[in-house]
Image 1: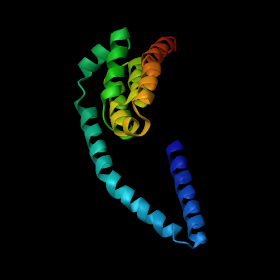
Image 2: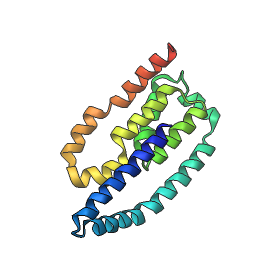
Image 3: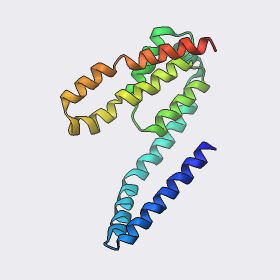
Length: 166
């Protein structure tokens, strides 16, 4: 239900912004459509490949390995491994959350899956190289990385503790 409401919100906001752009009558509406088409041409192939790849990863994850190395009782090694995979996995939310859901289904514990997601959110190597380094510079990356490095592990550990009591 939340997904439907969010989708309706996005459409309503887009229509409202389009109406405002149209009312300006200065080419803003046409420029906005042109920008959107350019972005769609750029993003759509990557999005399709990401969805397809995530689907294959979800089906190919070996359940026995996942539950052994990333299960609820995997402890610090499981949290470290999940955090590192989160940092290294390429792609956006479509890929990361599909892999996280598949890992849960394959027997991963909640703590390691949270460590994976937080590692991806805070430390994505792909995002760091493609966006942060060219735009923000090495000093920014250094400080962000140093401060964020323990967060996936600590978050996964806290979730492991909490989920064992629920």
